[in-house]
Image (cartoon, rainbow, N blue to C red):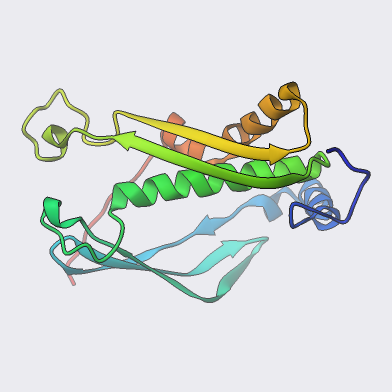
Length: 188
């Protein structure tokens, strides 16, 4: 259901959202962010990432508390199953980012979402990861996202709504369009 300009839509403070847009229009440098993740290998496939500091809105910032995320492999892939594996974290990042983009852009349009769920699946052939076949990708061969959305909208509006996420999601863009990644190493 489209609403008049309410302050909160989908938990998003729409007034502040539009203030942010105006601030970026006034000073484009406010839009530049740099995020960081620090990772430490623990054992076998188990490693731990800490996320705390980032740069945004023209200043160095940090989260209220560090986010600690464990990654591992399931036992069938010789891990200890101490966390989701890295490709599962990618699915999580994709689902979360597309959902957030959809919710924020719906809020900006005054569309209230009552409930939303998604399932994200990806298929990988280990021949690539294990270096057994050069013609097999090391990463996902394909990813499927399926959303279930409860909102008081027409079928046409629902179609517009679910397209908002992929259209504006930075993670979706990074995965589907690729991004340069520079890898370096140095001695400890």
